[in-house]
Image (cartoon, rainbow, N blue to C red; front, side, top):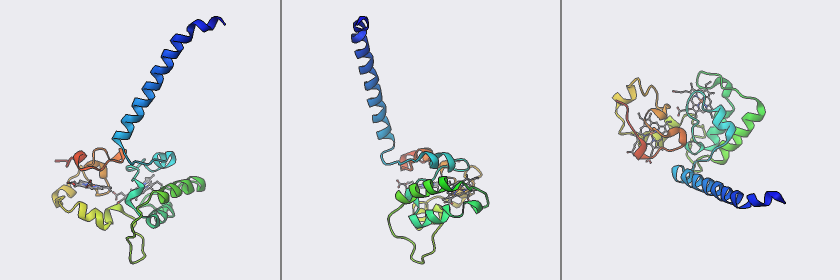
Length: 160
Ligand code: HEC
Ligand code: HEC
C-alpha cells in the first residue's frame, strides 16, 4: 500500500506518454498518407535502390519480377522461398489495380510504363544523362522523399 503515494506522479507520466504517442502518430499520417509498408520488403528491396512502392506496377508485373530474382536486371537478388512469398503477396495486394498490359506480356520496369513516360516527358535528355541521375530507375535522384513513398511535385528537385 505504500506505493500508493506515487499514483499522482504515475498518472501524470502516463498522460505524458499517451500525448507523445498520439502526436507522433499524427505527424506520420500527415507525412505519408497512403504509404503502405512491409518490413521484409523494406529490408530486402532497398539494398540496391529504393524499395519501389507496390502501386507503381500491376500484380502481374510484380509476380514476374519476384519470380526472376536470381536474374534481376543483371544482379542476383534472390531470397529464400518464405521471404519471396511474403514480399510477393504484399506487392500483389497493394499493386496498381488498373489494367494496363494489353499484349499480356508483363512490364518489369516502372520506368517503361506508359504513365511513367508521360509523367516525365518534360525531363530533358540532358537531365537523364546527368551522372547524378544515372538511370530513370534512380527515382531518388529527383524525388527527394522517394524512400518515404512521396513522389509529389513539391518534393521534386532536378539535379544540376
Ligand atoms: C542486389 C541488388 C538488388 C536487390 C537486392 C534488388 N534489386 Fe531491384 N534492381 C537492381 C538493379 C541493378 C536494377 C536496375 C537498375 C537500373 O536500371 O538503374 C533493379 C531494378 C528493379 C526494378 C525496375 C526499376 C525500373 O523501373 O527500371 C524493379 C521493379 C525492382 N528492381 C524491384 C526489386 C524488388 C521488388 C526487390 C526486392 C525483392 C529488389 N528489386 C531487390 C538490383 C537489386
Ligand atoms: C530525372 C529526375 C527524375 C527521376 C529520376 C524520376 N522522376 Fe518522377 N518526376 C520527375 C519530374 C520532373 C516530375 C514532374 C513533376 C511535376 O508534376 O511537375 C515527376 C513526376 C513523377 C510522378 C507524378 C507525380 C505527381 O504528383 O504528379 C510520379 C508518380 C513519379 N514521378 C514517379 C517516379 C518514379 C517511381 C521514379 C523512379 C522509378 C521516378 N519518378 C524517377 C523527375 C524524375
